[in-house]
Amino acid sequence: MIEGQCGMRILIVDDHPIVASGCRALFAADPGVVILEAADADTGLAAFVAEQPDICVLDVNLPGVSGFELARRILARTATARIIMFSMNDDPIFAARAIETGAKGYVSKSGDPADLVAAIRTVAEGGQYLPPAIAQRIAFGRLDPKENRLARLSAREIEILRLLGSGKSLSEVAWQLNAPYKTVANSSAIIRQKLGLRSLAELVRFAVETSLS
Image (cartoon, rainbow, N blue to C red; front, side):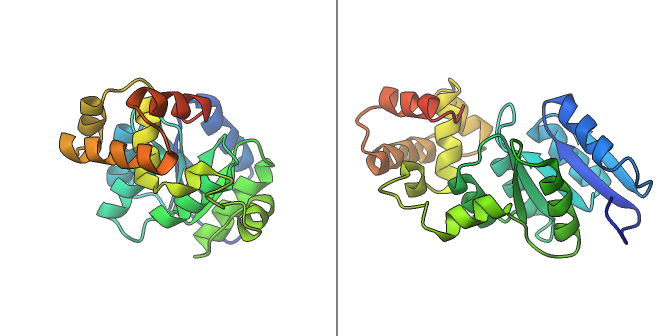
């Protein structure tokens, strides 16, 4: 329960209904908390615009564009939106990129459910939240580009890489990101250079092997 919070509206954007059900269970004892649901970035953005929730909890790996892109679109509309990214991936680079994108918190789905409650409480009060284990890994230099190749990429570049790994062509990536084809093609070339890969096929294989898709 979030003590002292009245009328808290939380938007959960995740394509797995069990996640929203789990969130409802976490806050079942607090009648002031309302859980809103959406299953992808498009419906998530529409729900945000229509409902103006207090907190948005966005799954990173949504169908179509990711939670990172959805966060960017939400923040472009409302710069003060309070966003928490939620992911199966506990790689600290994703947490770091989430914060850089403008999210106020990052929680791993594989962690303690209490982390999500703590994140929502902290962000609702105007703070930022990272689970202690992830914060420690960031603090102790686990983002070294020599050790973690993803650390060489921006959040936007990771998004392009993820879409390519899911089987999208460059033109499809451009369409989903509302970006010019030339921009995406140039970005993919820069990503290959940063990662030391020679071809688009190697880039796609890297994305799949890194479990980005």
